[in-house]
Length: 343
Ligand SMILES: [Zn+2]
Image (cartoon, rainbow, N blue to C red; front, side, top):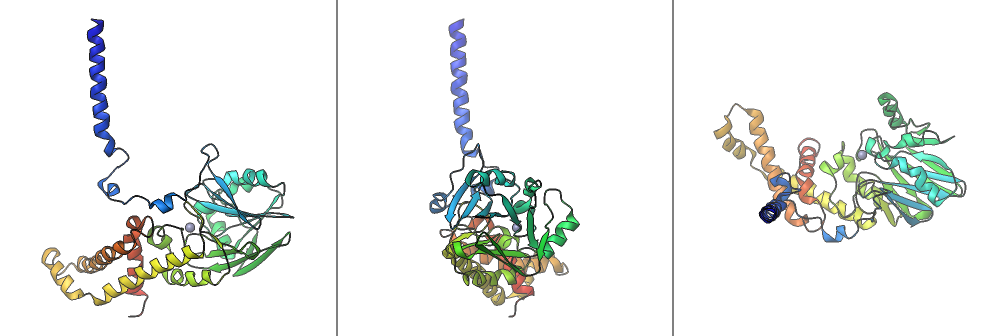
């Protein structure tokens, strides 16, 4: 009896093992679309930071008193000077840990917090700085206006504002802040630390990767196109883009520029050479000649599809995540080419 039961259990275990093995290839893949993505490039994977899961972030000394903090998804940074510490952004994920991360490395107090732009993923952890006495929160006036209107308890209000540029000096160190509009409506900062040859510009370049959705959800692709040369005009060795798995250098800015201009020029060429009437006439056979929105969509879809097909071949082995976001980049470029650009 006992033997029989044992055998039954053994049989059951064997059946379960087969079931698990059979199911394994589908685990972690919620759709056929996800299955289709190429793996992250090994060269990029090799640069993932080692994050202590108990801590949730890691800190890297990049020289000149500058430290970058990352959880492999968001980045912020801080500058240690003889007279205190300046923090750049407080992401929603690990912002609460920044004061203790700073205290691990210096006994100097945090004196200034700088906001790169309004987005809550980058500054939504600032509430952790609420009790720091005399803290200056520095941001563009346009950023302060937005945050005042939003009245979000997770994003402390700036108390030092400026219009287009500001130089901060503390403990003999200099921080140059300049306003740009490459990504967010209310403005984005270049945060430049000349002594450390360090540049932080959030949401434009993600070293090793294609930009995030629609060229970093830019609200101004025209300014985004100009941003690369504006960045390259600075003398820096280390670049922090606010996201993903590593910091970069000028080479990453140049590569993202090459990718972005390839997308733009390809979309423009395909759009301008397309026989739109022929595509619309073909579509009319199925959607009807009176459905003008559907006919127009057929034209735009053709430009987008042809562009993605051509660009993906050129970039899939050069930047990670190209297949994830390329269709969105193509649409951002297409809107610009069709409505803003000259012929
Ligand atoms: Zn952003």
